[in-house]
Amino acid sequence: MGVRHAVVAGGGIGGLTAAVALSRRGWRVTVCERAGAVTGGGAGIVLAPNALRALDSIGFGAEVWAGGAPPGQIGIRTPDGRWLSRADGGAMTSRYGLSARAVHRGRLIDTLAAALPAGSIRLGVSVDGVTDAGDAVVVRTSAGDLRADALLAADGLRSSLRRQLFPRHRGLRHSGEAGWRAVLPGSGLPTPQAVETWGRGERFGVVPLADGRIYVYATAVTAPGVRPTDHHAELTRRFGAWHDPIPALLDRLSRQGPDPVGVLHHDFHELASPLPRFHAGRVALLGDAAHAMTPNLGQGGCQAIEDAVVVAHLLAPPADVPAALAAYTEARHRRTTRISRRSRRMGELARLSHPLAASLRDLAVRAVPRRLTLRALDTVLAWQPPPGAAAPAAVPAATPATPATIRTDVKERP
Image (cartoon, rainbow, N blue to C red; front, top):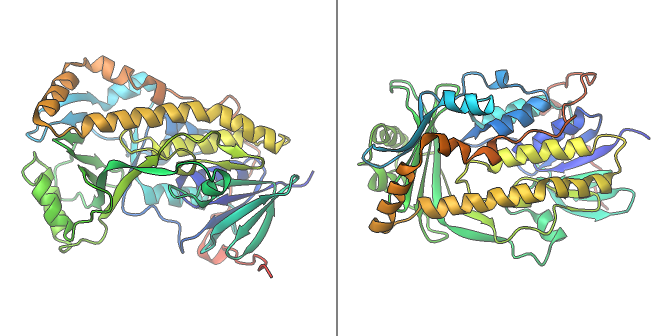
Protein backbone atom coordinates (compact mmCIF):
# COMPACT_ATOMS: atom_id res chain seq x y z
CA MET A 1 0.00 0.00 0.00
CA GLY A 2 1.32 3.44 -0.94
CA VAL A 3 1.35 6.53 1.22
CA ARG A 4 -2.17 7.44 2.25
CA HIS A 5 -3.52 10.90 1.51
CA ALA A 6 -5.83 12.92 3.78
CA VAL A 7 -7.48 16.21 2.88
CA VAL A 8 -8.17 18.50 5.83
CA ALA A 9 -10.84 21.16 5.31
CA GLY A 10 -9.91 24.15 7.45
CA GLY A 11 -6.62 25.58 8.67
CA GLY A 12 -7.69 26.37 12.22
CA ILE A 13 -6.46 24.81 15.43
CA GLY A 14 -8.25 21.48 14.99
CA GLY A 15 -7.44 21.11 11.31
CA LEU A 16 -3.75 21.91 11.68
CA THR A 17 -3.37 19.68 14.74
CA ALA A 18 -4.94 16.80 12.80
CA ALA A 19 -2.70 17.48 9.81
CA VAL A 20 0.45 17.44 11.95
CA ALA A 21 -0.63 14.31 13.80
CA LEU A 22 -1.41 12.45 10.55
CA SER A 23 1.77 13.66 8.88
CA ARG A 24 3.83 12.30 11.74
CA ARG A 25 2.11 8.95 11.30
CA GLY A 26 3.15 8.71 7.67
CA TRP A 27 0.16 10.26 5.90
CA ARG A 28 0.45 12.81 3.12
CA VAL A 29 -1.80 15.72 4.06
CA THR A 30 -3.36 18.58 2.14
CA VAL A 31 -4.87 21.38 4.21
CA CYS A 32 -7.37 23.53 2.30
CA GLU A 33 -7.97 26.91 3.93
CA ARG A 34 -10.42 29.30 2.32
CA ALA A 35 -8.74 32.39 3.80
CA GLY A 36 -5.62 33.93 2.34
CA ALA A 37 -3.60 33.15 5.48
CA VAL A 38 -3.70 30.85 8.47
CA THR A 39 -4.12 33.09 11.47
CA GLY A 40 -5.36 32.97 15.04
CA GLY A 41 -6.98 36.39 14.90
CA GLY A 42 -6.80 38.87 17.76
CA ALA A 43 -7.47 36.43 20.56
CA GLY A 44 -5.81 34.21 23.11
CA ILE A 45 -6.43 30.62 24.08
CA VAL A 46 -5.92 28.82 27.36
CA LEU A 47 -4.45 25.39 26.72
CA ALA A 48 -5.87 23.35 29.58
CA PRO A 49 -4.01 20.26 30.86
CA ASN A 50 -6.07 17.93 28.64
CA ALA A 51 -5.08 19.88 25.52
CA LEU A 52 -1.44 20.08 26.63
CA ARG A 53 -1.30 16.30 26.96
CA ALA A 54 -2.76 15.90 23.49
CA LEU A 55 -0.22 18.32 22.00
CA ASP A 56 2.61 16.63 23.88
CA SER A 57 1.63 13.30 22.31
CA ILE A 58 2.39 14.71 18.84
CA GLY A 59 5.66 16.38 19.79
CA PHE A 60 4.68 19.72 21.32
CA GLY A 61 5.62 19.40 24.98
CA ALA A 62 4.85 21.92 27.68
CA GLU A 63 8.27 23.51 27.14
CA VAL A 64 7.01 24.85 23.79
CA TRP A 65 4.55 27.03 25.69
CA ALA A 66 6.90 27.88 28.58
CA GLY A 67 6.08 31.13 30.31
CA GLY A 68 2.43 30.94 29.40
CA ALA A 69 0.95 29.74 32.67
CA PRO A 70 -1.45 32.27 34.25
CA PRO A 71 0.39 33.68 37.29
CA GLY A 72 -0.80 33.96 40.85
CA GLN A 73 -4.46 33.61 41.73
CA ILE A 74 -6.97 32.40 39.17
CA GLY A 75 -10.71 32.40 39.66
CA ILE A 76 -13.96 34.33 39.64
CA ARG A 77 -14.63 37.79 41.10
CA THR A 78 -17.52 40.20 41.46
CA PRO A 79 -17.51 43.65 39.81
CA ASP A 80 -16.38 45.26 43.09
CA GLY A 81 -13.39 42.91 43.23
CA ARG A 82 -14.49 40.35 45.82
CA TRP A 83 -13.43 36.77 45.11
CA LEU A 84 -16.15 34.21 44.58
CA SER A 85 -13.78 31.34 43.84
CA ARG A 86 -10.02 31.16 43.48
CA ALA A 87 -7.04 28.88 43.37
CA ASP A 88 -3.37 29.23 42.51
CA GLY A 89 -1.57 27.76 39.53
CA GLY A 90 0.24 25.34 41.81
CA ALA A 91 -3.03 23.68 42.81
CA MET A 92 -3.75 22.80 39.19
CA THR A 93 -0.24 21.49 38.69
CA SER A 94 -0.49 19.34 41.80
CA ARG A 95 -3.78 17.83 40.74
CA TYR A 96 -3.24 17.36 37.01
CA GLY A 97 0.54 17.32 36.64
CA LEU A 98 0.33 20.38 34.41
CA SER A 99 -0.81 23.97 34.69
CA ALA A 100 -2.80 25.63 31.93
CA ARG A 101 -0.82 27.70 29.40
CA ALA A 102 -2.21 30.90 27.97
CA VAL A 103 -0.90 31.79 24.49
CA HIS A 104 -1.95 33.90 21.55
CA ARG A 105 -3.93 31.83 19.06
CA GLY A 106 -1.60 33.10 16.35
CA ARG A 107 1.37 31.53 18.12
CA LEU A 108 -0.39 28.18 18.33
CA ILE A 109 -1.42 28.35 14.66
CA ASP A 110 2.08 29.35 13.54
CA THR A 111 3.70 26.56 15.56
CA LEU A 112 1.43 23.92 14.07
CA ALA A 113 1.71 25.24 10.50
CA ALA A 114 5.51 25.33 10.71
CA ALA A 115 5.55 21.64 11.66
CA LEU A 116 3.92 20.56 8.38
CA PRO A 117 5.89 19.50 5.31
CA ALA A 118 6.35 22.18 2.68
CA GLY A 119 3.41 22.46 0.31
CA SER A 120 0.88 20.96 2.69
CA ILE A 121 -1.21 24.11 3.10
CA ARG A 122 -3.21 25.54 0.19
CA LEU A 123 -4.51 29.02 0.93
CA GLY A 124 -7.53 30.60 -0.70
CA VAL A 125 -8.95 27.13 -1.44
CA SER A 126 -12.35 26.18 -0.04
CA VAL A 127 -13.79 22.69 0.21
CA ASP A 128 -17.23 22.78 -1.38
CA GLY A 129 -18.34 19.16 -1.07
CA VAL A 130 -17.34 15.52 -1.07
CA THR A 131 -18.30 12.30 -2.80
CA ASP A 132 -17.49 8.97 -1.19
CA ALA A 133 -16.28 6.65 -3.93
CA GLY A 134 -15.97 3.64 -1.65
CA ASP A 135 -12.24 3.09 -1.84
CA ALA A 136 -11.55 6.85 -1.72
CA VAL A 137 -13.22 10.24 -1.44
CA VAL A 138 -13.38 12.86 -4.16
CA VAL A 139 -13.11 16.26 -2.49
CA ARG A 140 -14.54 19.15 -4.48
CA THR A 141 -12.56 22.34 -3.91
CA SER A 142 -12.63 25.81 -5.40
CA ALA A 143 -9.38 24.94 -7.20
CA GLY A 144 -10.39 21.53 -8.51
CA ASP A 145 -11.05 17.99 -7.32
CA LEU A 146 -8.76 16.06 -4.99
CA ARG A 147 -8.82 12.31 -4.52
CA ALA A 148 -7.93 11.11 -1.05
CA ASP A 149 -8.22 8.20 1.35
CA ALA A 150 -9.96 10.36 3.97
CA LEU A 151 -11.42 13.82 4.46
CA LEU A 152 -11.28 15.53 7.85
CA ALA A 153 -13.82 18.34 8.04
CA ALA A 154 -12.52 21.02 10.38
CA ASP A 155 -14.37 23.80 8.60
CA GLY A 156 -15.71 25.48 11.68
CA LEU A 157 -18.90 26.69 13.26
CA ARG A 158 -20.84 27.05 10.01
CA SER A 159 -19.44 23.89 8.43
CA SER A 160 -20.74 23.30 4.92
CA LEU A 161 -19.58 19.69 5.13
CA ARG A 162 -21.66 19.16 8.26
CA ARG A 163 -24.71 20.40 6.36
CA GLN A 164 -23.94 18.02 3.48
CA LEU A 165 -23.49 14.98 5.73
CA PHE A 166 -26.43 15.77 8.02
CA PRO A 167 -28.91 17.85 6.01
CA ARG A 168 -31.77 17.23 8.46
CA HIS A 169 -29.89 18.41 11.51
CA ARG A 170 -31.23 21.58 13.12
CA GLY A 171 -27.86 23.32 12.89
CA LEU A 172 -26.88 26.20 15.14
CA ARG A 173 -28.77 28.12 17.78
CA HIS A 174 -27.95 31.43 19.42
CA SER A 175 -26.93 31.04 23.05
CA GLY A 176 -28.35 34.40 24.15
CA GLU A 177 -25.00 36.16 24.44
CA ALA A 178 -22.43 38.02 22.40
CA GLY A 179 -18.78 38.63 23.17
CA TRP A 180 -15.79 40.89 22.57
CA ARG A 181 -12.16 39.74 22.41
CA ALA A 182 -8.90 41.66 22.14
CA VAL A 183 -5.19 41.29 22.86
CA LEU A 184 -3.59 44.34 24.48
CA PRO A 185 -0.02 45.37 25.31
CA GLY A 186 0.83 44.61 28.93
CA SER A 187 3.74 47.03 29.33
CA GLY A 188 3.31 49.58 32.09
CA LEU A 189 0.68 47.57 33.93
CA PRO A 190 1.18 45.38 37.00
CA THR A 191 1.05 41.72 35.96
CA PRO A 192 -2.67 40.96 36.17
CA GLN A 193 -4.22 37.83 37.57
CA ALA A 194 -6.11 35.42 35.39
CA VAL A 195 -9.69 36.09 36.39
CA GLU A 196 -13.24 36.17 35.12
CA THR A 197 -15.59 38.68 36.72
CA TRP A 198 -19.31 37.96 36.90
CA GLY A 199 -21.89 40.72 36.94
CA ARG A 200 -25.57 40.64 36.11
CA GLY A 201 -25.83 39.29 32.60
CA GLU A 202 -22.26 40.43 31.89
CA ARG A 203 -18.76 39.02 32.31
CA PHE A 204 -15.22 40.31 31.83
CA GLY A 205 -12.15 38.09 31.58
CA VAL A 206 -8.45 38.93 31.88
CA VAL A 207 -5.74 36.41 30.92
CA PRO A 208 -2.00 37.21 30.85
CA LEU A 209 -0.33 35.67 27.79
CA ALA A 210 3.09 34.07 27.50
CA ASP A 211 4.51 36.98 25.50
CA GLY A 212 3.61 39.67 28.06
CA ARG A 213 0.44 40.80 26.34
CA ILE A 214 -3.00 40.55 27.93
CA TYR A 215 -5.97 38.78 26.45
CA VAL A 216 -9.29 40.31 27.46
CA TYR A 217 -12.80 39.19 26.69
CA ALA A 218 -16.26 40.33 27.68
CA THR A 219 -19.75 38.93 27.27
CA ALA A 220 -23.24 40.35 27.50
CA VAL A 221 -26.77 39.06 27.14
CA THR A 222 -27.98 40.35 23.76
CA ALA A 223 -30.30 39.45 20.93
CA PRO A 224 -28.64 37.91 17.85
CA GLY A 225 -27.27 40.33 15.28
CA VAL A 226 -26.94 43.32 17.62
CA ARG A 227 -23.63 45.08 16.98
CA PRO A 228 -22.51 48.27 18.79
CA THR A 229 -21.45 51.16 16.60
CA ASP A 230 -18.68 52.06 19.09
CA HIS A 231 -17.09 49.12 20.85
CA HIS A 232 -15.10 51.17 23.34
CA ALA A 233 -18.10 53.23 24.39
CA GLU A 234 -20.20 50.11 24.84
CA LEU A 235 -17.54 48.30 26.85
CA THR A 236 -16.93 51.36 29.00
CA ARG A 237 -20.65 51.74 29.67
CA ARG A 238 -20.89 48.15 30.79
CA PHE A 239 -17.57 47.59 32.55
CA GLY A 240 -15.88 50.96 33.16
CA ALA A 241 -16.76 51.03 36.88
CA TRP A 242 -15.65 47.46 37.59
CA HIS A 243 -12.60 46.58 39.66
CA ASP A 244 -8.98 47.20 38.60
CA PRO A 245 -7.35 46.59 36.17
CA ILE A 246 -10.47 46.59 33.97
CA PRO A 247 -10.72 50.42 33.61
CA ALA A 248 -7.02 50.64 32.67
CA LEU A 249 -7.43 47.87 30.10
CA LEU A 250 -10.44 49.61 28.58
CA ASP A 251 -8.38 52.80 28.40
CA ARG A 252 -5.85 50.94 26.27
CA LEU A 253 -8.61 50.03 23.88
CA SER A 254 -9.63 53.66 23.59
CA ARG A 255 -6.21 54.64 22.24
CA GLN A 256 -6.95 52.67 19.11
CA GLY A 257 -9.92 54.80 18.09
CA PRO A 258 -13.68 54.65 18.57
CA ASP A 259 -14.00 51.29 16.78
CA PRO A 260 -10.62 49.78 17.54
CA VAL A 261 -8.99 47.48 15.06
CA GLY A 262 -8.27 44.18 16.73
CA VAL A 263 -11.47 44.02 18.79
CA LEU A 264 -13.47 41.00 17.70
CA HIS A 265 -17.22 40.96 18.30
CA HIS A 266 -19.44 37.97 17.64
CA ASP A 267 -22.60 36.22 18.73
CA PHE A 268 -22.26 32.95 20.61
CA HIS A 269 -23.72 29.90 18.90
CA GLU A 270 -23.77 26.18 19.60
CA LEU A 271 -25.25 23.15 17.92
CA ALA A 272 -28.96 22.96 18.68
CA SER A 273 -28.53 19.24 19.39
CA PRO A 274 -25.69 16.73 19.15
CA LEU A 275 -25.01 15.19 15.75
CA PRO A 276 -25.93 11.51 15.53
CA ARG A 277 -22.27 10.70 14.80
CA PHE A 278 -19.07 12.43 13.76
CA HIS A 279 -18.33 10.38 10.64
CA ALA A 280 -19.80 9.08 7.40
CA GLY A 281 -17.73 6.55 5.49
CA ARG A 282 -14.34 8.11 4.86
CA VAL A 283 -15.30 11.58 6.17
CA ALA A 284 -14.97 12.74 9.78
CA LEU A 285 -15.96 16.02 11.43
CA LEU A 286 -13.90 17.56 14.21
CA GLY A 287 -13.86 20.67 16.37
CA ASP A 288 -16.69 23.17 15.90
CA ALA A 289 -17.85 21.34 12.79
CA ALA A 290 -18.63 18.31 14.97
CA HIS A 291 -19.65 19.78 18.32
CA ALA A 292 -19.79 23.58 18.33
CA MET A 293 -20.15 24.65 21.96
CA THR A 294 -20.31 27.85 23.98
CA PRO A 295 -16.98 29.19 25.32
CA ASN A 296 -17.96 29.07 28.99
CA LEU A 297 -15.57 26.25 29.94
CA GLY A 298 -12.82 27.40 27.59
CA GLN A 299 -12.88 23.95 25.99
CA GLY A 300 -13.81 24.57 22.35
CA GLY A 301 -10.24 24.67 21.07
CA CYS A 302 -9.08 22.08 23.59
CA GLN A 303 -11.69 19.59 22.42
CA ALA A 304 -10.70 20.19 18.79
CA ILE A 305 -7.10 19.33 19.73
CA GLU A 306 -8.27 16.16 21.47
CA ASP A 307 -10.35 15.22 18.40
CA ALA A 308 -7.36 15.67 16.12
CA VAL A 309 -5.02 13.51 18.18
CA VAL A 310 -7.58 10.73 18.62
CA VAL A 311 -8.59 10.55 14.95
CA ALA A 312 -4.95 10.50 13.83
CA HIS A 313 -4.17 7.75 16.33
CA LEU A 314 -7.05 5.63 15.06
CA LEU A 315 -6.08 6.25 11.42
CA ALA A 316 -2.53 5.05 11.91
CA PRO A 317 -1.65 2.62 9.09
CA PRO A 318 -2.71 -0.05 8.37
CA ALA A 319 -6.08 0.84 9.91
CA ASP A 320 -9.20 0.45 7.77
CA VAL A 321 -10.34 4.05 7.25
CA PRO A 322 -14.15 3.67 7.60
CA ALA A 323 -13.71 1.44 10.66
CA ALA A 324 -11.23 3.86 12.20
CA LEU A 325 -13.61 6.78 11.75
CA ALA A 326 -16.47 4.79 13.27
CA ALA A 327 -14.17 4.17 16.26
CA TYR A 328 -13.47 7.92 16.36
CA THR A 329 -17.19 8.66 16.80
CA GLU A 330 -17.31 6.04 19.55
CA ALA A 331 -14.33 7.61 21.30
CA ARG A 332 -15.39 11.24 21.06
CA HIS A 333 -19.16 11.62 20.85
CA ARG A 334 -20.15 11.07 24.47
CA ARG A 335 -17.30 13.12 25.91
CA THR A 336 -17.82 16.17 23.72
CA THR A 337 -21.60 16.03 24.20
CA ARG A 338 -21.20 16.07 27.96
CA ILE A 339 -18.70 18.93 27.88
CA SER A 340 -20.94 20.92 25.54
CA ARG A 341 -23.90 20.51 27.89
CA ARG A 342 -21.78 21.43 30.88
CA SER A 343 -20.56 24.57 29.12
CA ARG A 344 -24.15 25.52 28.34
CA ARG A 345 -25.18 25.09 31.98
CA MET A 346 -22.21 27.15 33.14
CA GLY A 347 -23.27 29.93 30.76
CA GLU A 348 -26.83 29.87 32.04
CA LEU A 349 -25.54 30.31 35.58
CA ALA A 350 -22.99 33.00 34.74
CA ARG A 351 -25.35 35.20 32.74
CA LEU A 352 -28.11 35.46 35.35
CA SER A 353 -29.25 39.08 35.34
CA HIS A 354 -32.01 39.35 37.96
CA PRO A 355 -30.47 40.88 41.13
CA LEU A 356 -31.82 38.21 43.47
CA ALA A 357 -30.84 35.33 41.19
CA ALA A 358 -27.34 36.76 40.70
CA SER A 359 -26.90 37.25 44.46
CA LEU A 360 -27.96 33.67 45.21
CA ARG A 361 -25.59 32.44 42.49
CA ASP A 362 -22.70 34.36 44.03
CA LEU A 363 -23.43 32.96 47.48
CA ALA A 364 -23.54 29.43 46.10
CA VAL A 365 -20.25 29.79 44.21
CA ARG A 366 -18.53 31.33 47.25
CA ALA A 367 -19.72 28.46 49.46
CA VAL A 368 -17.99 25.76 47.39
CA PRO A 369 -14.67 24.75 49.01
CA ARG A 370 -11.58 25.37 46.87
CA ARG A 371 -10.67 21.69 46.77
CA LEU A 372 -14.06 20.87 45.28
CA THR A 373 -13.77 23.56 42.62
CA LEU A 374 -10.88 21.76 40.90
CA ARG A 375 -12.26 18.30 41.64
CA ALA A 376 -15.39 19.21 39.70
CA LEU A 377 -13.22 19.64 36.59
CA ASP A 378 -11.56 16.22 36.81
CA THR A 379 -13.65 14.68 34.05
CA VAL A 380 -12.60 17.50 31.72
CA LEU A 381 -8.98 18.23 32.63
CA ALA A 382 -7.73 14.77 33.63
CA TRP A 383 -8.26 13.34 30.12
CA GLN A 384 -5.35 11.35 28.72
CA PRO A 385 -4.51 10.62 25.06
CA PRO A 386 -5.18 7.02 24.05
CA PRO A 387 -2.32 4.59 24.74
CA GLY A 388 0.09 4.65 21.84
CA ALA A 389 -1.13 8.04 20.58
CA ALA A 390 2.40 9.45 20.54
CA ALA A 391 3.76 9.86 17.01
CA PRO A 392 6.53 7.39 16.10
CA ALA A 393 9.96 8.74 16.96
CA ALA A 394 11.29 7.61 13.59
CA VAL A 395 9.23 10.18 11.71
CA PRO A 396 11.63 12.96 10.61
CA ALA A 397 11.07 16.55 11.61
CA ALA A 398 8.82 18.44 9.24
CA THR A 399 10.04 21.19 6.94
CA PRO A 400 8.37 24.46 7.93
CA ALA A 401 5.68 25.60 5.52
CA THR A 402 6.11 29.09 4.11
CA PRO A 403 4.02 31.08 1.63
CA ALA A 404 6.58 30.31 -1.06
CA THR A 405 6.05 26.57 -0.67
CA ILE A 406 2.26 26.52 -0.55
CA ARG A 407 1.02 24.57 -3.55
CA THR A 408 -1.64 25.84 -5.89
CA ASP A 409 -1.27 23.16 -8.54
CA VAL A 410 -4.66 21.56 -7.99
CA LYS A 411 -6.13 20.38 -11.26
CA GLU A 412 -9.08 22.53 -12.26
CA ARG A 413 -12.43 20.89 -12.80
CA PRO A 414 -13.69 21.01 -16.37
